[in-house]
Length: 590
Image 1 (cartoon, rainbow, N blue to C red):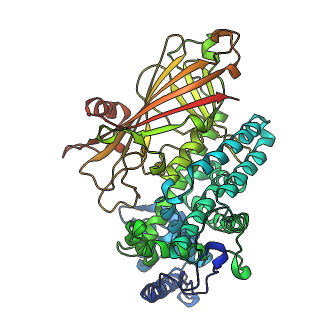
Image 2 (image 1 turned 90 degrees about the vertical axis):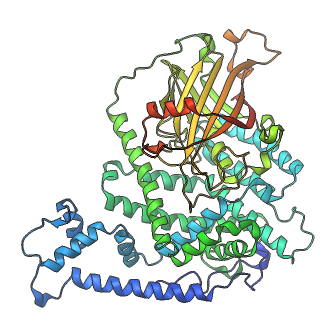
Image 3 (image 1 turned 120 degrees about the vertical axis):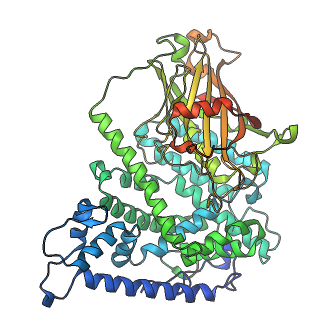
């Protein structure tokens, strides 16, 4: 029988590893009993279903195998089974119920891979938790962080100048070194390692360290890329489900290896020599959620994941949602492969071609961390808002736009992230038409489909660009929205400073307008004019403003996500926008 996270001796992280003793701050005997009862009931139901699907030989009726069920999907119309002759009425009813059961694939997976559900549950809990962490939760010294950033930024720039076949390994080592120094427990001030606050802080830092190491891992990046490259199999739901299950199981094992490296880099040791320390980290995260007021907003949601109820099937619904995200990215990958095999002529208008200034955009641009400013404009006062930014949203922004390859040609601009740690560039770049009209783009610079919401739950895709005649200036506007309902599981820090987060309850749809101005500038000491200058003498200055608003849908209207870009443009034009965040940054050509 599949056991829950508290039904077996989970591998513990020692006091030396996460500074957590064996006395748990969180004990849930009622969770264990309820989960056991639920799982026993599910096993009995599956056994009864399996007996029906494979009746005894003495009944001498055709066997309805899982493959037959898969083949029968196209023969069910309006609740009527149109299969072959010889099936009994019971078998027909089972076939129809199986087709309509959106959780059937999870039940079948549980029979083949008993550990899948528990491991997926652990990953979902860790993901929900890391989405609640902001930079201020790390309690790092600003001077210490800036010193580490500057030193490793120079090393990262050197790695990114190397040929694409070799820079990925060097870049991963640079990131690992930076994170190891930043979260090194031996250099972190710990006045009393026995205090509960220090133990909690160690858990938060270990979780953040694990997330960032996984995000920059060549192994993890390659795992996701290969899982999504299913070719024409993207139209086969059963095949996609099998790939998704393999992805979850492999990712869980890889995170266990990375977690051991994370604790070792900080001078910590994993207790007991267990094969995978992830369950112990999950237990410590649960202690934080149920023991710290700061993370109390996650209690109801995490309890639902643990019990798979309140609302019913909470874990099953979360797994279905994760699968749909995976399927959307796999479909996007399939479309890109088809387009590469059958390219069609592109029609773009806008900024002229071939000007010397325009060609200066065509380079690899690296964000200068010392130039980044982020100020809140709330209450008509300006204050530094960097520490209140969500960690996951900030990590995604850096992943997408920290280092980008820009190409301007034929009236369009393409952006492709250079932060590809597995050595493979994004299959499709983010493409923007430079014609001053509203359009929608399909993928982010990393190749992630815009069908998938950002880390903060925002849907983004609408944009317009307004280039100057000489090509030195480029104004862009991006529009994002988040249609939340009561009980939304998208975490939020309730701070207006973050462009990707906002309060979880709103009378309407929350919308954001991100206005960016990019300007090509030249070093004061450059010997040649910009038109004839070398890219290394040129840099890009970015100014941006994030404005917020709320869209109230008419009673007879449709949701923003169901509108066309043209219909949404009408909404963007009539809304009243309020500035909330001001950003500034600079990029250097490498």
